[in-house]
Length: 170
Image (cartoon, rainbow, N blue to C red; front, top):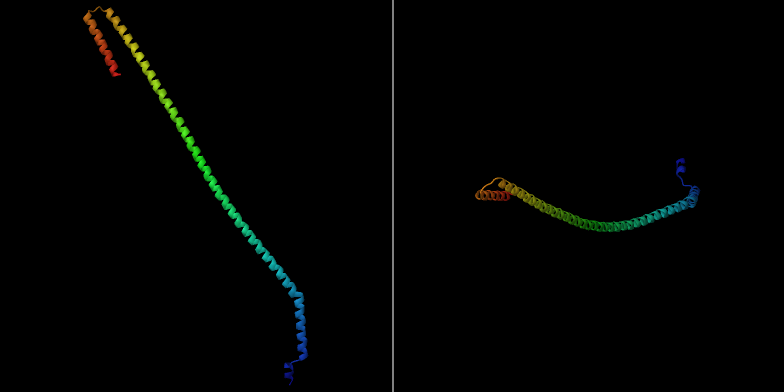
């Protein structure tokens, strides 16, 4: 019957074990559970604070983004205005340059016409001088030769015809 003693239930030993378990539970609760719970609460508060800061930072970033987009839009509008202003100034300058060039071209044409008219007058004067010179030479030759009136008339007519042919060819 010895084998049954090993399996038997000892009430005092059970009560002592139960008392040990309760004491151990109370000790663990007092020294471990409360500090661990407090540490977990602190950790949770820190995490919640970090989330709140992250949300604030996100809101600030969204506000900054909106402000940046507004400034960028204003910059585009201002740039368009500057471009329009530059284009209008360039067109005005273009018109001024074209007007100046036109006036210079007109001046050059006017001067060329005046020079051409002056050259024409010089040419006419030169031709007149040549005619006078030729007429003088003809008169000299006529006087040198004693010719009759009929040959004199023929000589003058041929001279006049020669002058007319020279003027027609010019």
